Length: 252
Image (cartoon, rainbow, N blue to C red; front, side, top):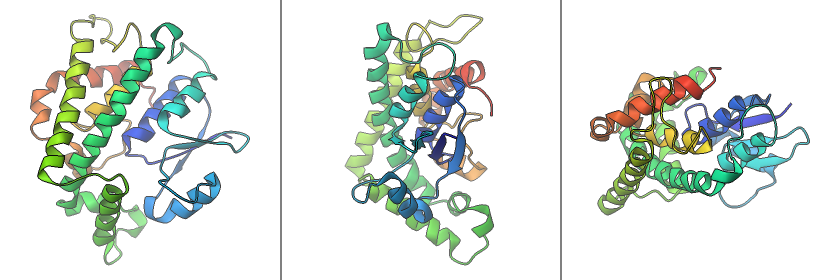
């Protein structure tokens, strides 16, 4: 069966899962452990240099399809339902997909330093069966710092300011796209109808406040993902995201 290797709490993995679920493509979820599973993932993908990351989908022939956008496009050629990449909206769908990636990178750079200051959140990053081992929090902190370095995320004042700017610009563009477009029967969509643009942009809001379901986050981890000031400023987008989840996100 098709396998999706991903991280349960990752917005990038959630984009891939949502696309597969909404298109009703059967697949098996495989949880990726960044520190323990990298060598196995490199072996399976044949990528021995450079950054290796998830989600990665392995189709029935064992072919590796990396990146949530590519996985969603693959899913769109299969399964059932309306296309997530309709031809008449494709340029805009791809534009919002790119905007989402930039904003998610900014959100990651902002949230991980908060996690480093929260031992409870760090402990939630450790597999449950390993949490009682000595040094588990330190190992998790090492993994978080490694992730920041891996994606060249800056934690300096100027760098964090730029991340704030990138994230808020994407949120402002999202707000403009969905403003006054909803109805009493359905939430607004980013474009003329539900597409991958909605899946991509709901994940940006995850770094303002995580969604009610979809991302498997503990209480402390949700605290690290939540942006304390932007949460109030973009309360309307949190409500929009939650409504989109309720209407369009299949529950597992």
